[in-house]
Image (tube, rainbow, N blue to C red; front, top):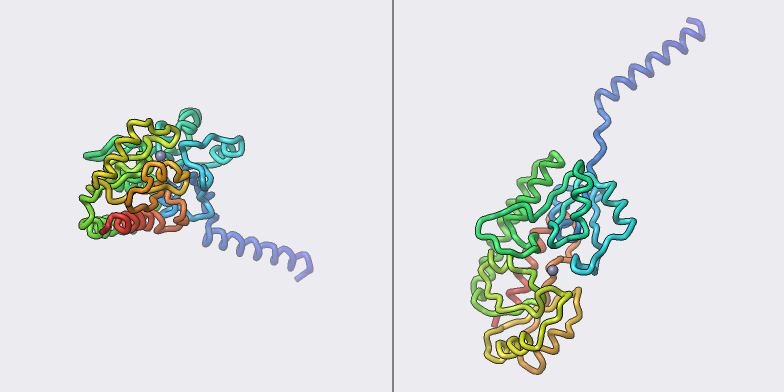
Amino acid sequence: MTLIAIIMFLKTAVLVVITTLSFAFPVSAKPMKVLASIHPLGLIAASVTPLENLEVLVPEGITPHDFSLRPSDIDRLQEADVILWSGRQAEPYLAGFARRWPDKTWIDLSSFSVEGQVRDPHYWLSVPISLKAQQALAEALGVTSDDFSRQVERVVVYSDEVLAPVKDRGFFVFHRAYDHWVNERGLNQVGAFTLTPEQKPGMRTLQLMRDQLRGGDVACVFREPEYSPALVVKVVGDLRVKQGELDPLGTHISLSKDGYPYFLRDMADRAVNCLKK
Ligand SMILES: [Zn+2]
């Protein structure tokens, strides 16, 4: 064989190997980028999204009540293929983009309705709504995930078990964020320090709350880590009532496959700890 013939032979051989390899290991499609608007939706999304393809829009320590989009956030929105959000009432800053970019997959928790639902824009605290949203995300990503619903069902059973002895004990929450959870778990929420954190309660509300605390209707008051406890301290004063902390955003729970069921479990545990005698 001449040198040229050998080179030609090697070239063909290399080509054959490359072609065979590319059939055996097809280049996979570009992974879908998921943007969860807030941390608890990130917890739901992490059940089916590899963490390297998942981002959370609203930074830690900021709530949807006091968030506004920065230019860099708009870039992140633009790069996302799928956006998981809570709807225009909870997250008005995304409503315009959902209309402007209809070619992206927008999964809006407020679009799922379930039986006996209460009106509260903190939809991620509803188990059936969150399950539906997670299912929709799994479908958008083309994956199946029976594990998630099984895990969540187990936590619901656990929650109902541990909460049963304290179901009738009254409590105040910091802001009106927990109605889905309170309703689904059948708990006795007596009131909230504020309807939304942007509004401070009036004197009459504060007086009513003091009376309820004095009357013994309230076993526990819950603060929230994102807001100053000054209001709680002011209302409770020197009255003897237990205090706990609930976070509707579950900020202290890190994004992982089972983050959401863990978030629900943690809420039940915190409630029991504060409500028990
Ligand atoms: Zn809220």
